[in-house]
Image (cartoon, rainbow, N blue to C red; front, side):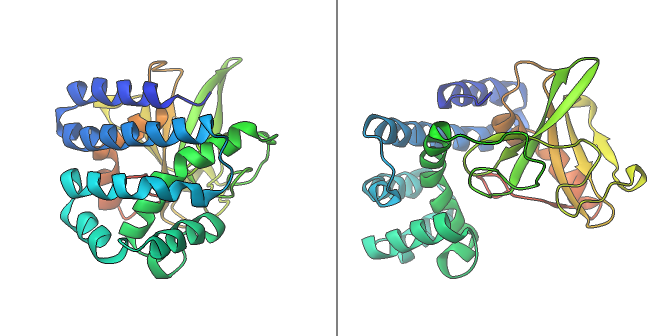
Length: 254
């Protein structure tokens, strides 16, 4: 089910042409995915299981952000992540506890940690024996929250899977329930779809005011959920204008 980094890179290129308004975001994501591919190749070829081994990729990531990153990201790297000890503290704190406080509690800190940890976490998840039918709202492998939902055809309908924001594991989850607060009243779970991309929708919750985007592969089998979720920025704008907040931001902080 998990799309390779090559497929994500290709899809980002395709969608940049399809949705010009998201071209700059997709171009930035493509550069990140190409960097992550090099990290992934290192992790796999060396069977890396210690997150500290990722530190050797930090200089290249800092250099990449100095060239293509937004100013706040680049400045954060220059001011806080030049010291290997700070780099290690950030990676291990995020891996062990997620975004809590200190450097991991900042948007820029989370960004640097996730860029490096995602390919590492995906590799570890690929080696694990994971209960994909776990009926919990967090990832059965790394306990991170979902960045999106995926609808896959089954019988006469579609089954919902949640997509982990860190290790990209997908696990089954009931369709009519909010993954943030557990609300099950259909009247409190509105759905919004825009005509320009009718295969991606906003699943919102009026009880906790959060939302998650769902990518319907029964309507578009070419979609790569991690990438298509980024490309559909107007859905984020609609949700926020209506007072909903995303359950978990994607790699770009959106």
